[in-house]
Image (cartoon, rainbow, N blue to C red; front, side):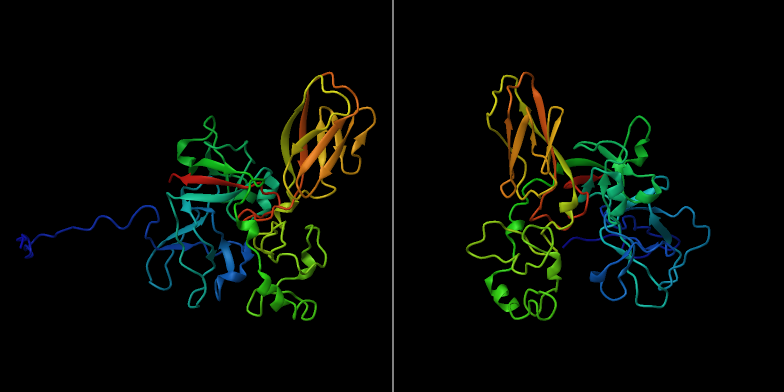
Length: 376
């Protein structure tokens, strides 16, 4: 066996062996969240004493430099550092991996704040800054510049976007403001794999038949989460259609799970997509077919061909052309009614039911997600 030296204490000396506290990806530290922050929202899934959210998941936090008094943790009686939502000015600490609830001294409320500093995370992306302001969770927006893969991010200095992320500009921003880099973007129009096919099965439908329109709500079995059937319909426009969301052998259009992966919020997002061009020399009455996205919503389509706009309400312009729409399959046919003499760019504005959209993306105004490598 090996012989160890130094097993006896040497009088008048000390060992001084501690150095590493923890790994740096999620530092093991006792912080205190600033308790006078306004409540962002009530989170019913937080459990008893953890519904009063003051810092939400995915937000950037910073040291509270405005704190002038000593902060003492009630439970441990230790003086601790207080953290708050980052404002783009205070030193950034990291990102919250979960909701931070308000803590009340001598009560079983709140939770222990923690941060992550170098992880690969996913946040919803908002092309419009106003939509991002309405989302009280961590997010990324185009509020200070068009976001692309490869861009670096910083915390917004907008008081209504505290803790949320915008583009870092090397021309005006210093390096210490960088919190991470976008490695990938995924638009909301992309296929979300199998999630749209995850629905209640026939057995759940048979269980629900006894309760639908009798108890006032529909539920996936007696033990499931209730939901209001008036909010859901097959075409996504609202109305009473209780059987939507059940999977059977005859299902051809999957709709996801109601309130979870059915895209009920993201259907309010107006998207813009370039479809190609109508080439010079195209003959009159030639049918041109463009694919947009499945499950298009009626009365939301505007097809731009050159300087001409075709809508659901006015799908034909005399002497120019007309469009035909397959809403379910997502195809738009454009038929010029005169010979085309110059190239015309084709684009479309639209809304659709994004069945299979994950909850993290399902916000009004969101267009998919960005994936970020944190660099604290």
